[in-house]
Structures are given as C-alpha cells and as structure tokens.
Image 1: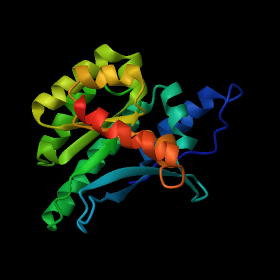
Image 2: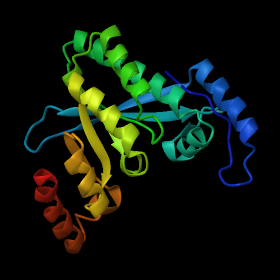
Image 3: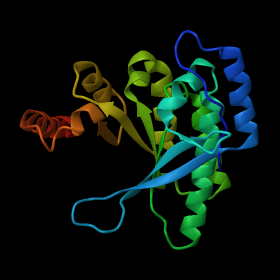
Image 4: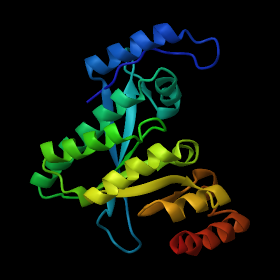
Length: 220
C-alpha cells in the first residue's frame, strides 16, 4: 500500500489548500508504504512485536518519513483518513502473516488527533473484518494527546481496553503530568521518549535516569 504526496514546504508559507488537494489525491490513489520493525525481548530470537512504520512515496519515487508529512496531515484535518488506512492495512497484513504461520503481535502508532471514540469503533470493526484477536494489537497514543485532550483519550482508551486491545503511551519522559495520566488511564505499556533512550548507551546520566524511570513506570 502506498501514499502519494508532492513536496509540501512546512511553515507558515505553505499553501494549505494546495496541500489539502494533494493529500486527498494521495489517499485515493493509495500510495502509503507500510513496513514492519521487529521488537525483541532480551535473549529471545523471536520478535515480541512488529511495529508498523509508515513511509510516503512521492511522484519521483522518493520515500518520505513521517516528519515530512505528519504535521501537515494534522493541520489539514487529514490525520483520521490516513490513520484509518494504516489501521486497516496493518490488520489485513497481520491476517496474511498469521495465515502463513507468523502470528506476531503488532503495534500501530496513532496521530495526536485520532484518539477518539469513532476511531476506537473503527479499530474494533477492522479487527472483526480481518479476524484479528484483539490482544494481538497495541495502539500507541502520543503523550500530547492524553495531556491536551484527556477526555477524548480516556474514552478511546476505555473502549479499546475493555475490548481487549493493548494500549501504549508513546513519548514517556517521567514528567509529573504523564505520571498522573499513566496512573489514571489503563495503559499496558509506556514507551520512553526517544530523546532519552538514544543517549543511554553513551551517557551514564541518561542511563541512570532511564533506569530510575523503569520501576517508576511499573509502579503506575
């Protein structure tokens, strides 16, 4: 599956109307590329999860990372249709891999705008369509969503958790606001902010801080 987008300049000078036309055309022409990244547990050669990654191919065949298009899709209120395509195709592919003997759980990243009850209903519907056991799917919710739009996030998490899906908080940094949220909401996992984890190998201060966050996250 692929997603088509012409070059769109970020910033205040962007022509949002032109971008909207291009993005809508991209969705209908089906040019989103999905990849899987294996996540392993220590000393286990079998992937514990496949994380679904998204890339966009432009008209010249160049692939774009989410940093090139995610903010624009949210500004243009196109995050919902993009996430729907990604969710549906991810579950479709899970079914194909499962039928081939590879029933590996998957994790799907959501945009900051889509953690709402209508999307929860869509997730449940896709799982039914492709016969995907709910416990095989983890939805990753950005930390900004649960802080800035907590009522919608609470309803979203409640629906999916009650249905047996896994929920992950993405971008956990140990801050007081996120600690409060993780205690109130029913998250199964927290994912450390990349700004922290990327320095743990070379910086002992970051390594000690991340080490202290692990039991803190488990306690909440």
